[in-house]
Image (cartoon, rainbow, N blue to C red; front, top):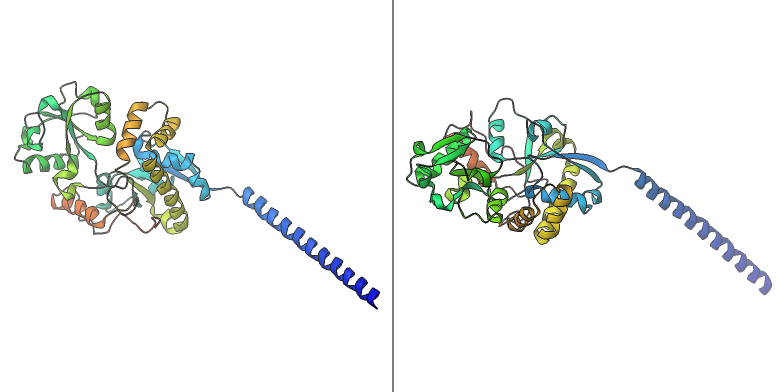
Length: 342
């Protein structure tokens, strides 16, 4: 009897081991099959169209691409150069999922009867860092002193209204400014001509004058009224894409957020990543600009990308009050914070 029981238990053990081995092998095959299937499934493709040639406003995008933050979210991202008509039309038509624009540039669209269907989903820089720059020797250290000097203008109604506001509220005469129609592409060179003052984005053109050792005065628009602290630039997305692919939008914004946070913590390495993608850029300018912007991407906001409704609506309210848009833009129009990662 003992011999029978021993043989019985031995046989049972062998059968149990066999079943376990077969089950484990089957499970391994399933796991391997899932891995192979996952590897075979391509990442979801999205396109991001820039507003201009690559610069430090865009660094977080290139970092997210280079560091694999997009890939971690299952995204295959193409960063595109802008078309002649700008990013808005391309994004609104569904020919790109995301694009870069500016709150002031978007205003006429949101006040139009035939709107391009786009929404701002993140602020790339928390505060407006644009303003007026001039050579220090010109003495334009307050807005009123633009009077009697020349200014390179794009001849845009909103642009001139902002200049008029800061000059006249400082006691100057807007009509005494000599307007020179000009699209300045090289601020350093322009300031050596008959142009006394230029509207610039300080992170790039302002830093460019500093790199060249040129002494300047700079009038930061946001210092002359909260209504001028508008969002510039912003990341926009097409409304259809937002409605139909909310999870993809959230994944993309999470990756982009990580890209900008990396640039904040590692400005020199982030600058090198941008230069790898755009080697034609001046390396000293890129690195100095990146260091300066490290404190500006989030600034005093609670999180990257957040758009303050009061500031957004306040700027559009000011435009309507000054007859710079066709109709009043309802509060809360044109932006959304709901897709931002927490």
